[in-house]
Length: 424
Ligand SMILES: Nc1ncnc2c1ncn2[C@@H]1O[C@H](COP(=O)(O)OP(=O)(O)OP(=O)(O)O)[C@@H](O)[C@H]1O
Ligand SMILES: [Mg+2]
Image 1 (cartoon, rainbow, N blue to C red):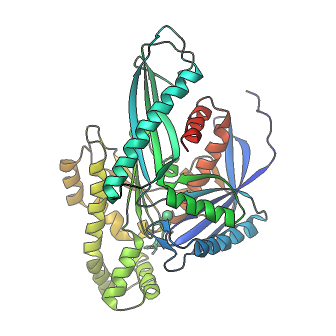
Image 2 (cartoon, helix red, strand yellow):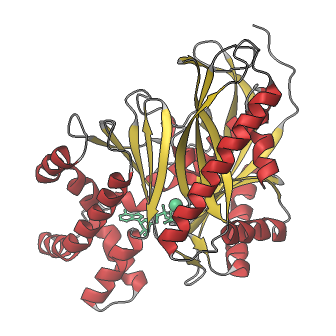
Image 3 (cartoon, protein in one colour):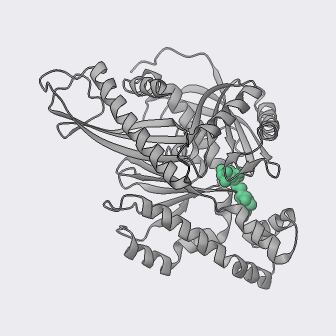
């Protein structure tokens, strides 16, 4: 295989706008060679920045003060750019939170003329029909959940996850003949008001916004699980817990609830009657086992009920996924909030696992692991300092960016992108 035409060096920026921290990564897109000797695009991280959001600027993953968040992003970008010695203009911004939803639609389309070859016009028409149907369904669902009939949403990420012609799985149906075409499309939607806020921030930062991406979707681009068996990804941040489900090679759903790191900090602040920053310090020392035995025990006791509540949030999300298929045997954690020992402990507790085996279609008690930075596909951390679960999400966003850009010349993505553009 010969290398495709070499691309000029391209520098990109990823911004993860979190409830508690903005993280920015600067990376270089380059063409490398995989361990198997294949040519592939990869991102080399050259710099990173992390800045704390000010109180009230973000609410449960959503921007609440555009100017305030812009300033915090600016500082994070400066930090990352100084380390990288380059300041890219093109950026991908990641968002998460309660109203970002990802669902899969399965659609069987009988073909009027089975003897004719499927061409791109027919395919585009079918995809368009499926996408409108999926969009209506998502809008209705969000209206019901928020009790607001006028919620406006927009698709942000889409993936053709399964294509079959007369039952045979194909990667590209163009040129096939058959009686029916089956499509399974995974879509992520976000409320228009959130998207406009992010676009506004990008404009104020004078960035060329390549894409807004759903962070839980980006997380599924890791190589720490067997795609056939699947995995449940849980990103526990400051404001929200975001969950993505992958099973049988397909990203199936994304859900979120507003209970994460801040909840535990607030509880400690309340119980010890101290301010939030003091409570945050105590929480960290508790996680790092740096407190005396009795204080450790006391904190565990204080956080017990909130952890139970957090667990029921996870259970509610699992209930929303289709129960007709098995749930994956692995839970993968990331996000700063996942460092609270109680999180992993409660997920691994024998009583909880037993209960889950009864309640959900697990075939075995799920294994609980942390995602490691080296497991993010096509990303090399040249800074060698991106340790810790809070950097997994921005690194996964960088990985998704590499895919989005490298995907331009793959056959089906342009059709799906065209349909998304038409819908917008
Ligand atoms: N060692 C630790 N132990 C417990 N909690 C921790 C630890 N380190 C970080 N955290 C918590 O992680 C949270 C921040 O994580 P992260 O940076 O992933 O959030 P975010 O991306 O800003 O928020 P979100 O994803 O909810 O929008 C904070 O609540 C912080 O207290
Ligand atoms: Mg986050």
